[in-house]
Each structure stands twice: as structure tokens, then as C-alpha cells.
Amino acid sequence: MSAAAALVRVSGLTKHFPVGHALWGAPKKVVHAVDDVTLEIREGETLGLVGETGSGKSTLGRLILNLLPPTAGRVYYRDEDIHALDRRALRRLRGRAQIVFQDPFSSFDPRMVVRDIIAEGMVHTELRGRAERTARVQELLRTVGLTPAHADGYPHQFSGGQRQRIGIARALAVGPEFIVLDEPVSALDVSVQSQILNLLADLRGQFGLTYLFIAHDLGVVRYLCTRVAVMYLGRVVELGDSVALFERPQHPYTRELLAAVPIADPSRRHRPRTVLQGDIPSPIDPPPGCRFHTRCPYVMEVCRQVEPALRDRGQGQLAACHLD
Image 1 (cartoon, rainbow, N blue to C red):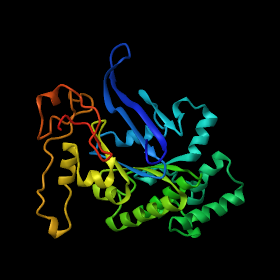
Image 2 (cartoon, rainbow, N blue to C red):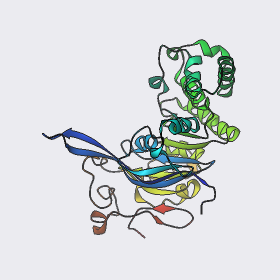
Image 3 (tube, helix red, strand yellow):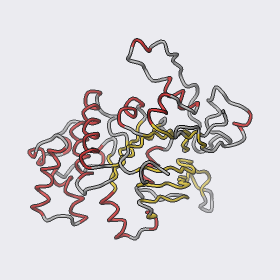
Image 4 (cartoon, rainbow, N blue to C red):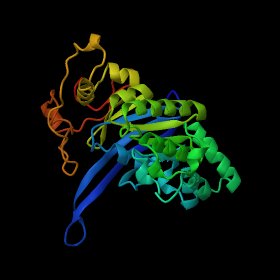
């Protein structure tokens, strides 16, 4: 049993995108964006989802929110299959589960002022009257570190950090309990990143939120996340408690990712640095067996033939690796 109840359960989730079509309409090939992912997100936690570009992190986040239809598998929100919901039930779900994008500007209507951007979700879910929505917008702007005066501005008039705060306010507007944060600080300056991270941590405590935090910066993940899932080429290869994963990584890919992180502390710079060799294989034609075997320094013959399953490595850590 989990230490906390599972808010979200993902079972065998798969997403393949067709690429090109043959004469009679069948796809010639497919992109294996997400393949047979099973995990849970516990109520009140921040689950970090890390991996290189192209590993399937953002696609998984969108599948969990039913923004994309899955090829196979199921997503359960409080034990309710979200892909079996009718339109009315799906609208209710939108009030409980939201997303914050890497570049909020691309998800804003440039013709709308901030007041309308934040209030839009409240209108569609019919949460409040106009006067109440206006008051709620002002309250949310203060909550994310802006002022009511910002309500009359257009998206292009704000900095990247301010736009991200507006995106967070928009997500909070409908009173969610679960938020997918899709690379929310990767496009920001380092000083602004820390401000947004601190804001997210404060909001988590203030509103009792649960986060899925998608990122490629391991330092950011270590700061904010309670557990971490590592993805490689569409699959989760390691999953576990954040402290244990950073101190005792069980999968060779996780070790290589951690070894490549620059070390600011001079007393720890004796740790050997490595650079992960080669490029991530094409998701159109992933290698057989363990998908990491083409880059793994510990590759064995079994790795080339048999796909390893996630198995318990102790202390709550799971790893998909044939190494003992």
C-alpha cells in the first residue's frame, strides 16, 4: 500500500502517432511516444518526470489529462476511468485537473487581457457571476505575486516570469487539486526560476495541491519533487523516492544523467563527470530489448533481447534493468 492514497493511476498507458500513410490509408510507421507506462501519483505529492528531449514526458502529461486519446491503457482519477467520461463529467474533471505549459504565451489568446484569460475557465465551468469572477481574478493575481493592475494588460506586455505567473493563476482559477506542470521554468532565467519554484512550493502547501512536474533539469526536480520517475524513449526506467533516487540511482541511465550534472560545491568536484554517449534512438524504430542498451556502458546480451520490467530494488525504488 502507498503511504498516501493514489489520486491518479496510470495503467499500461501507450501513445503511438502515425507517420505517413500507405496507399490504402494505413500508417506506414508509428512514433512510439509513450509505451506501456504504469505508475501512480499520490495525493499531496509532487512527482517529478524527467528524461531527455523526446523521451515522452509531455505526451504522458497530456494523456493523463485526457488532452490526447491513448492508443492503449487507462488513466484513473480517484478510481474513475477518465477516458470513459461523458462530456459533462469531463468538464467536471477539468475543474479538478489543470495544466501549466512551458511557454504560456503560446497558450494565451493575444487579443485577450489578463482578466479575461484567467476568468475564462470560470466562465466555461459556470463557477461564479461576473462580479465574483472579477474579485477572484484580483485575488489570484495577488496570490501569484502580481497586482490587480496587471488585469488590464495583454500577454505581450509581460515578461516570461510574469506570463508564467499568469498561467499559474489561470490554472488555479477553477480550484484544481491536481496540476500538470510541463517544463514550467525551463524557458526562464535562473533567478526567475527560483521565484517560480518557491511560488509553486508555497501554493502546494496553501491549497493542498498535487503536482506532476515535468522537467529535464535534475537540480530543479531535486528541489521540488517528493518522488521521481525517469523516462527513456517512451518508457519509465526508474521510479522512487527523490532522496533515494538521487543518492542511490539504480538504473544506468539515471546514473549517467546525474553524473552529467555540474557540481557547484567545490568539496564534491572530485566526483567523476561523464558524458552520455550517443543520441537517443528514433522513437519510430526503438531498439529491441532494453531501449537503453545502445548507449549503456554495462550492456549484456540479455539487454539486447529482453525488455526488463520495473522491479523492486528496495527502499521504495523500482528500476527496469537486468543488472542486479
